[in-house]
Amino acid sequence: MIGWLALAGCRPEPVVPRASPTIAFTADETAFEGDPAHASADLFGVVVGDLELDGDPDVIISRHMLGPLELFENDGTGRFVQLNRKDADATGLYENPGVADLFVVDVASEAPGVYVWHDVSRSGPWRFRVILDSAEPAVLVLRTNVEMTSPPELLETEFDQPGDTDAVVTLARSGDFSIDTERFGSQLVVAVEGDDPLPLFVGSEGARFDREVSLLKSDPHGIAWVDAIGTPIPDLFVSRGALTGDLAPPFDPKIDRLYEHVGGATAFVESWASHASYDRGRQVMWIDVDHDGTNELHVANTTTPDHVLDPDAGFANRASELGLAAVGPDSIAWLDLDRDGSADLVHADGAALGVSMYRDGVYVEEPGAGRGLAWDVAFDEELFDPAVFRVADFDRDGDLDLCLVEVGEGRIWAFRAEGDGLVDATDALGLGGATGFEEILPLDVDNDGWTDLIAASAEPVLWHNRGGRFEAVALGVAAGANAAVADVDGDGLADVVFATAGARGLLRNETVDAWPAAVVTPVAPLGTVVRGHYFSGDVLAQSWGQAQVTRYHQGLLPLRFGSPGHDPLVGLSLQCPGCPAPTVELDASGSPTCTPCPDR
Image 1 (cartoon, rainbow, N blue to C red):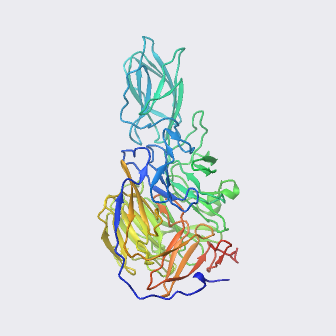
Image 2 (image 1 turned 135 degrees about the horizontal axis):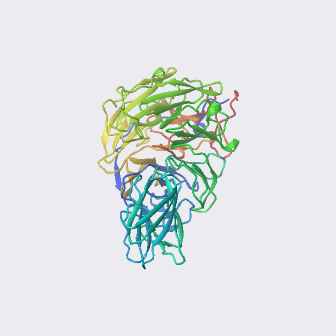
């Protein structure tokens, strides 16, 4: 058994120190080409991955309930082209084909017809405008997948509602009306009755439909863009949040969906969908939950028990079997708290922090404070997304540490691995009193081998790790809290992709005199701890599968280990989930590979 793997069969020697790197970022809001960015601020995150495994990080932007996922392909230079434009989508991801934009403030309408759109709000109503072409009334049959909560208010209108999700509207005069639905994620089917029905026009550009149209306002929450089930290229799992209930024909009742990329630049097909009506799948993450060497999908549901979906068992939910059915958090992270080689679950539910410790094949729930995980936050009521977890090694001791952002005030807590739990190291790391954290992104800005942090916000701040203590560096550029880190232009430096209301952009890392970095793609289950060993004896740990976690989403790109000349990287080791000690070998392509754990 090999404890660690020397790089290139030799031990690099340090060089004479040179001038320190000069950190610099420039903002580029011309890097994205596609549909106009929606003006609403209701974003739900940015995900990075590699669509076709060509080595160039690609991007998915989730605007939550205000449109489809936006898929952008990188041309190799950090310039992105949208593959699923609303009027020319070939990806299979857009749910309202032919409709330029379902979400508009108002529509320009003069010709007779029935005009349908949705308010520019995740919780707003479906809106209608009917322009009659004769004295004959218009009769509309409406169906929704969830209860209609407010009938239309329009003079000379008959509203017959035989069921909670069905209505017949008869209009004797032209005018506007709207209906609300019980849930944010909803489907609306509109049919126009009669021998000579009025045409249907949908969205901002008035896409025309005859007699009937089925429209979907979905509710995407967590996204996992990861090659986790053995396919050659990444699959896309989308958790649908509040989109519950049986969808009216022509849609089947499908909540969470797994899309397989089947080749070409754009084609996705749905390969699996959940018909269970569980509520609000928030954060999702592929990881080896049961430590059997293959990946399962952890779906953290905020108001119902978690799911652990096992593709080896037909995506059966194994949460009860594994002891995780009672957990219902907003945010999750995985790290080995008690140093037994098995990843444990850390989670936040409102203000409550908890841990689930892996014990003999099942997880046992414990209060977070018993493992040193505590914060001085109290909420009057449960927040929608109170916490963001990130896993990284801040002090190069070879153990994964944890940082926690309280979204409301933007405060940060940092916990260092110690003993069989965590210890609050916020002040010791120089982060005490720091605010403005809406999103936290670990990266190594200058490839010096120390994990830095970007506090992503409208005015992002770099927290530069200076040998185990962070110092704030104002970047002097504008960005947004919905962001992700990747080397998008192939220059060896970590850039920041961001999205805001009305804009998409890129912070290009143009640090001068940065060091090189080793790029590592393990052949191992997600949750494997990859460690870089340095000449000085320091060890930097990274979690394979959690390095590209953003908000509720998971991407997957090769790991990067900075190698400064004065303290070069000299070796690697891998520790698979459930293995008490590191094991590593090279496969035929030269990639580090976990050897079978002797205890399995």
